[in-house]
Image (cartoon, rainbow, N blue to C red; front, side, top):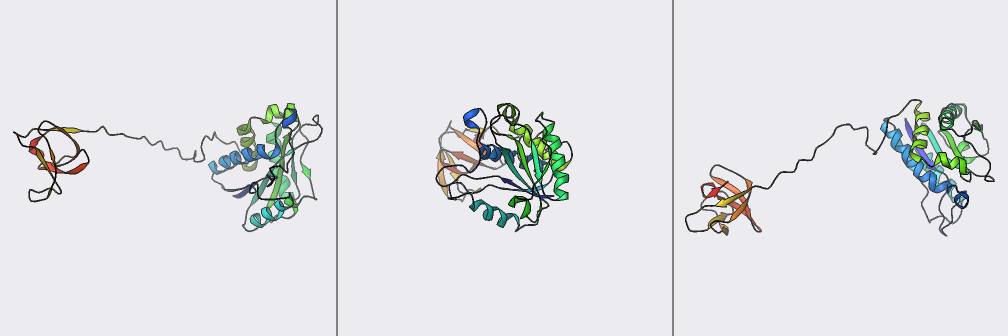
Length: 264
């Protein structure tokens, strides 16, 4: 499937968040939490082979929450997505708790029920799926859309469950895919090939001329220009050994020296 994920709300130019926050009562900031959550959901969905785009409103650009609507809808409706999922958290009085998923269409209800079931399995109180007809994200997108209200950001009991972001992301992705998913540690976890990095040890050869230094030539022949000299008894790095000429490196000079005057 081609899926779009969006993070509800934004960080305004003046540094304030348009989202709710329970940080002052043992909970979490709605926007900051969903920013982490949706990145993880994206990884899980991609590991299952889906094409996923994640939309996060540009930070410290908007001056009002009303600017989020056109920014999101323009992008979401420009592509033919099969599903749009926007992440939110509820907030009320510090006592309300539980999880719910919002929808408007019948197809959306199907996805909402699956995601709801998964979130409830984390031991959130089940507030059931909710049909909402007054939200632009549900009404104005071309694709089937659902909105997750994973838990109440101002509920300590909810956050004790919700703080395990990776677990909640996996449950949401499993609800979307309608199946169990494996563990994802990297965005490209689906590639199972292990590549071993091989580091070759540097090889040296000792110059064994009778008295004179060994010449380093520009190319592998006796008439080539001499570009350096290696004193008798010194060692040169071997780059490529040959039967007649060996490519060597001595200090900053790289060239060719006669193999018969090198002891490997």
